[in-house]
Image (cartoon, rainbow, N blue to C red):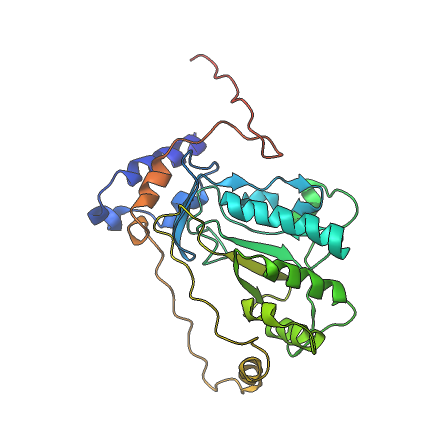
Length: 309
């Protein structure tokens, strides 16, 4: 009964005027409990950290060169352009660079939007997390996909661990950055440093897209530009000029070297996003009917027959 009430509540709330925002639950509860996509034309709506997704496509759980992880989260959804890019990266990096295959983490929820846990971004189906751990040669069970841990690439917060970091990682990240639709790739500052060191005397133009950011030592984060036809989608500003090595990178490490404050500030609690904080079109996304049922591979399958009451 609870599974029936959640989508019904989302539909009712989507019809409310924006002035009724205070009566709404946090948006993450509405989007985080929507198990299936909105049967609408594909469209990324809003900004990466404040929006939703219409017409989401599911990345198949298994492919010729990838395996989706943490399936219980139901976050292997994205704009069709993002899903195609992940599949292309997996296949081309295996065929042309010798990478064993991708272990794919979170993309987005079926209808995007704020998540119940974790990311602030990943809301409009244009972000994907790719593990830096190479894919095993066998198909993992669903249980293994929940329990297997990603591997940190760091020896210290200033340098990568050469026992796990390889030239193959450099090739993989360079290929990902080479795609025209990719806007940003986020990695830990120590990984950015390793990329700068590995490309001395080579073409470094692709490094401009690779930006240092906290927490990205187990995986790298791909972000693509707003696809054509995504009215209301807000692109991130272009990255700063240059390859991001040298002084800009040193500023990150300077932050690591600063002594901790004697009296740490209490973390400021962020206000939960409400449906009224998102673009108006996200109400339509929530209220939309889902498509036909999807099989485990992402192909459409007929809905089960309803039992007569």
